[in-house]
Each structure stands twice: as C-alpha cells, then as structure tokens.
Image 1 (cartoon, rainbow, N blue to C red):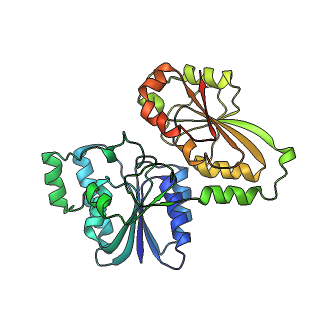
Image 2 (cartoon, rainbow, N blue to C red):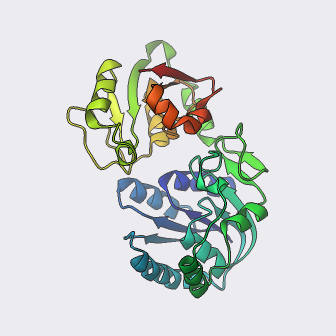
Image 3 (cartoon, helix red, strand yellow):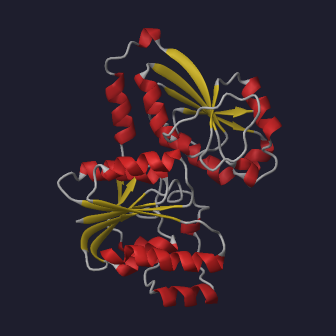
Length: 318
C-alpha cells in the first residue's frame, strides 16, 4: 500500500497520473483543502474511483487557536492509518503542518515528492528560505507529536516528480511528468489543422490581493486592447469583473486546455506571470503571451525569470 497526499486540484491531477502510472500498486489518498468549490469536488471524485480509500479534511479557519483545534480533529481523523505500513509516501506541500502531522503518525518506507505548483523551482519560495519555527509553534508541534520537518523531507526524498524538468529543483533527483503533453499529442493525431479556430484566453490570478495595481479597470483595458475572448479565473479569485466573458468549469486550467484541444482549437494564452501557463507551455496548439511593464517586471522579476528561455512564450510590453 502507498500513500499520496494532496492540497490543491493540480496536485490531485498529478496524483491521478502517479496512481495510474503505478497501477499494480494500491493507494490511500489524503486530501487537505482550504477551500470548497466544484473543482475540488471534481478531482476528489475522480481520485475516489482509482484509490483504495480517500480521506478528505477541509480547513475552515485562519485563526491560530482554531487551527490547533482543527489539527487535533485532523489527527483524530487520520488515526485509522497509524497502524498501516505504507511502502511509498508521495507528498508535494512539504511545509504543511497537517501533512507533517500525518507523516509523523504513520509508518512508511520511502518518501517521494512532487510539484507544489512552482514552489520547488522558484528561488523566492518558502522552500528555499531558512526554516524558522517560533517558540509557540514549536510547543504546539511537540504537543501534536510532529517530528518531521520540511528539511527532513528534502534530505530523504528519493526522487521528485516534476512538470518542470529543465529547471533546478529543491530535490536534485527529478523525474519528468509528461502526461499533459502526451495527452494533447494523442488528441491531435486525427485533428484537421486546416479548419482550426484560434481563440484567446486570459489566465486569471488573485493579483488584487497582493497588489492594488491590478484592479478591475486595468484588467478590462488589457482584455479590450488585445481582443481577448475569454477569462479563466483562478480558484482563489473572489471578485467578478463586469463585462468580461468568464469561463466557468469544474476543470482546472491545464485540464480545460486539453478539452479545447479535443474541439480542434488553437489557443492564445495571455497572462502576467501565472505559473499555470508554465504547466502547459509544451502543449501543441498553444501560444503564451506574458504581459509586463516596467513596474510589474521590477516587482515580480524572479517569477518572470521562470518563463525566460521557454520557446513557446513571448513577452509583450503593455
């Protein structure tokens, strides 16, 4: 029996691939979510069809006091796994205290890691910073029995499954994940390229939460200027921009593009620096345009650097 742990829909999509790739082995799945929406429901239900058992726990609060209560609830929920021996454990969010608690509860052999978005390759991410655990947090971890830390996983991970094999990773030994590219290539075998329609999609990000520069009017001007057909919102976006043609789907962006390919579409993707664009940069029939100006580039240069040198990505000064 193996164990795979997920926090985001993208991680669940990767988990589905890893389970199918190891189809002669049984998998226990644990899902930790911080939101409730149709995308989580869709990918959870898909995983239920291919695993032995699935445990789902939704974190409801940001309060530290309530979070301790929720961690105790989570510990009680995963208590049924404490006597199960897992040959392999797969984990992406290696700093998540809930998942570190799970690791500290179970018995297992080998640890494998996989992508937590681009945190594994972005030198600005928390995975590249020195680990700092405050006094109160260290006491809480001791009470809960958390004995594993992020750096323990980095040191012991046998291999890391990645969508970004050309980038340096926090885990030196990497295994490429090619399932998106393989799937799109198979779908294009019988397509009629002469009759392909080209559509443009703006890939949304919850940018207004981190920088007021990205307000609704600014986004609307971009969409109008480049005559972008559709807007694909990020799951954590909470505002609706009036007059914009939204795509509503239970699929995450990567999966949705595959569905467009099945309809014989060519897609131009516009984004500032959404890393979801990196995940699909190798797909056929896709062209990516990264938008920037002096202010945006100076603020988010290290993130933009991830896009440099990728053949299918073009930078546009706005």
